[in-house]
Length: 340
Image 1 (spheres, helix red, strand yellow):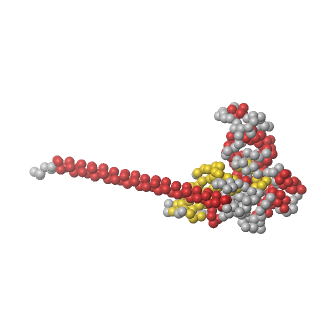
Image 2 (cartoon, rainbow, N blue to C red; image 1 turned 60 degrees about the horizontal axis):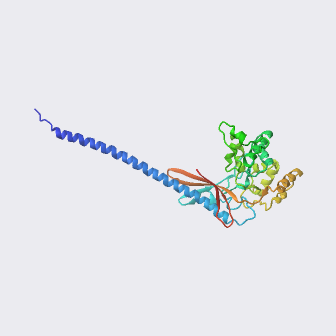
């Protein structure tokens, strides 16, 4: 007969195998957890790097605005507005910085051209201060709204931003908004962000999407004719051919905005020197000048600053969008800040 096995040794072997199996599973899980933690820490570190890259882009614009040598006017061919060396894939701190925007030199869209720097908010129509007739023209020409509807929506905009309770023609006060299925009050105060327009009676997402790039809420009050887009000039009541003539004259001989040969308007009345004008066109310009709607300088700017990291894992980015006000002998004042 064969020898009987030792039960104790067999039990020890089985326990050892169980322990080894447990330790193997534990080590594998621990490795996975450590790897995940390291990846998460690496991700957070990259996010922080991209954030500070985007911040650096903003600080660089602030420095350029502080060093602006042309205090009496602002235009596309200044370093803060278009400088590819500083603001297009600029190498900084192990990453890249890009600040860009479209000048909107073509009708109906932002145009194919891209400039690298800060965008002038005075290139848009200030819906907190624009008179009703300009709001109507904006809604008709850019928002593609019928005349009667444009009057109603413009009245509602006036009622939203004014402090009284009188209802404008086609407008609305608390009585209308409180009667909605999800009621709220008429603000009776200034718009703080453009999207607030979507709360106004008659405004739809479709209309807003058409006009959002032509409006501002930052009390610019006047439109800078050196930076105004085609759509902005058209919304002010100028005819199409006059808008095209102004932009082509402004671009200079190379037909591009933001280059050395740009013509810069030093005063609003310089618009009269762009070439031959029909009587109607001269009247349109003079009307805007007499109403003090035009200017040639700016103090409020929008910055879309993108911080990027490019490595074996691909390209990752983080964007900061801010609006700031330039203050003489003071630091820039932040009016809006959003991180994507």
